[in-house]
Image (cartoon, rainbow, N blue to C red):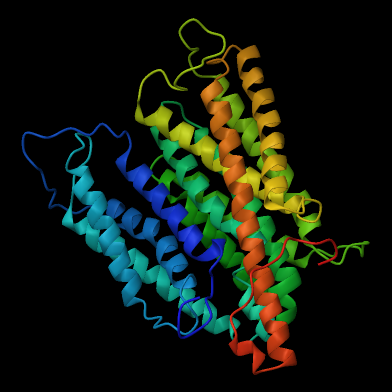
Length: 419
């Protein structure tokens, strides 16, 4: 715990999510990684409105999560997020000096920093809005394990949009829709069970947030499929609005995570199936059959982006499986093993489907990468679960004994049935 106050966002949704998004930003801005010493260093001093907007949008989630990760007692001015965005962007632009297909630009540093600042301001505004709700509801609203799925979907949408933009075939951007609707379902359910009853947010504003969230993730496909991105944003907002107002009959469980995941899982499965079928339309590997080496025959931008997209998709899958099994798996090891086994089974089936359909063939590397990504997603869930339970215990101590609440929360034990 940092001195001077209790950590807020110590788990995944704070510093962990920030690190994950930062890595994804580095990957997508440095593809295809063909570094070489140039004959001369080039700086682009021009300005294009589309590039500037894209640079701003990509760093908004980074600023938001940076602010979310700060201790409650820390200086939470958004200028620190602006500095973080500028430093990260400066590193990216410096690395791009050694990429033949990239141009470094001082304007990119400025727009990236502006995006991080806007994201931090957004988090501050949301936090102020949630401050009017009951204490525990407000504190948990952005930290819920379900919200971890919403954060993980943003880099998946980025990569799906970039893969669609790099694909020589049109129509690939349609894969964004099922992935985006997963987030809409979750946002609608969180509002229905948490924010709506607490009066923190109107249902109409929720629809706007869901639409904006989809646009923030899918903006990378705007150049190739602007109408699909716009339609996806409208559809996400409408679905969140409908889910938030849907009456669910009372069931044996008080918790709403199970029904939410059961509603979201088919959409994620549809995304994985569509991703597999699209992969099956690509040219077969030389010699066909199962490929043991690299999953792409040449280190082209499109192939690398598709591989990263697969890893991001199975990170979300592993997280979802671990949360679905949250009450059954008593230790992080069990959660990771279960998520990895289920993910490996599904990816093996899908890779065999690609082979049967005459596509590139099965890839051992793709299979292992998917399993590793699912294990990572499961580990992420356990980290966030422990943090949320620590928040709940801290709130209970504050209610029972205000003096005891000054002590740091103890490490969260494993998830137990009925908790």
